[in-house]
Amino acid sequence: MTIAPLRVIGLGPGDAALLTPQARAAIAASDCIVGYTLYVELVPEELRHGREVLATGMMAEMERCNAAIDAALAGRATCVVCSGDPGVYAMAGLVFELLDRRGLAHLAHAVEVVPGVPALCGAAALLGAPLMHDFASVSLSDLLTPWPVIERRLDAALGADFVVVIYNPRSRRRADHLEKVLAIAARHRGADTPIGLVRQAYRPDQQVSVTPLSAFDPATVDMLSIVIIGNGATTMVGGRMVTPRGYMDKYAPDGTRKRGGGE
Image: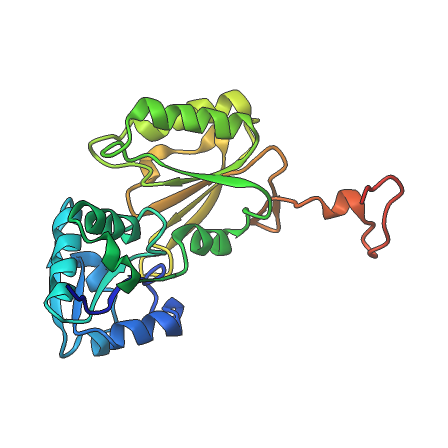
């Protein structure tokens, strides 16, 4: 059995300027584009033109990925488009898992994962430099991961003083999850800890704000948002959110090493 090229592509945050040349070329080399309707609409119109498009709504990930595999098995070069990076809370892993489940693991060599700008990197750039030191990312969606597991991971990451990036922070069905996260954060962080909120990054309705933990309003957050909770050292510099890497502890501002600064 043979299979045509099957690419899982990251579109980045949604601005065509952040679509990498590699991703653009991969879409152009495809006969068929498969994806969630919203993400297919992020593909530049000139790349969609003349190509078969298979788009589905929310909660149809299995259907989309199986359709992409079927198209590639039928000999059509196919791409699955994802927002951000395809290997970060997206479809790359599911494509491989389905190939394995369908007894087609030997065809995994035909799958190319094309990286994109992850949502957390796009959000961090808009906020300033909040991810300069160790960080963890946690999705609050409990559709695939039980909430107690999510809660345990959050408590561990916040307790270890990681900067924490929150994906899928709030929906109508689970409006109280983010409130629970803020309560966990309050056990490990000071009231003035900066929390960054980026909504619709690099899209026409983009919103960017930083608020102290004590004043953060979860009602301002939705599923199109990324939330970044600072660590114990995260600060504000001229309105920008910054997590120090530690340079100022080791070096004087002129670059000379401080006495006792370590190796």
